[in-house]
Length: 117
Image (tube, rainbow, N blue to C red):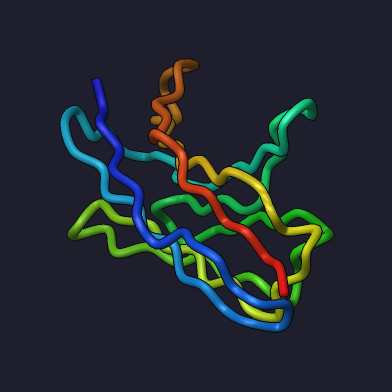
C-alpha cells in the first residue's frame, strides 16, 4: 500500500502560478509512474500530467507549455508547476502512484485549485 500526501492548492488569479507537491510513502516499487489527474464536479477525472521514475513524461494537450511535472525520486515526491493558469484549470487535483507491475493505483486526498479574479 502507498500513501500519498498532497499540498500546494489554493486560489490564484488568471495568469498566476501554483506549485503542487505530492509525497509518497509505503510500498514503493519500481519502475513506477506518478502524476496528476483533475476533476470538476459532475465530470470525469482527466489526466493532467504523468512522469515515470525514468524521466518519461506525458501531458494533456490543454496544459502543454503551461504546466511542468517533475520528480525527486530520492524523496518519492512529484511536483506540478502550473503557470499561466486559466479559469478552466479550476478543479480538484489528485496525485496518483502506480507501480508498472501492478494494475492498482494509489490516490491522494485531492487538493482544490481555483483560478478566479
